[in-house]
Length: 126
Image (cartoon, rainbow, N blue to C red; front, side, top):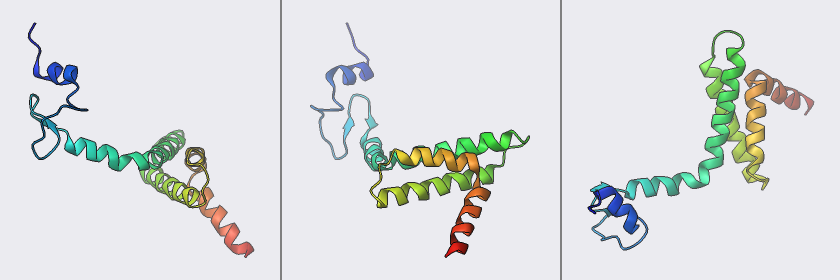
């Protein structure tokens, strides 16, 4: 039985071990360089919750504004960016990162105007 190049690499698990090294980490049978994908996965691994928080707030804000008839894309992006800011603040305070997803959905549901009013009220009290 003759194996294709892809199944040959996967059967031999060349992506994990026994891979002939030639500069970058890649499977010679496939001719596909995997080094960039590995680097990208390693780079994005600590940012996974931040990316998920951004997406959660973005989707919540898009759905909230879609109820009014038209999606406000700028509002959705701003909610996503606020959610990433909340994620970094929670990480700095050593609060578990999964709390950031709940905060992101709250930010996306309430919107940027609510967040701005909340900051203004806190600023005026001081």
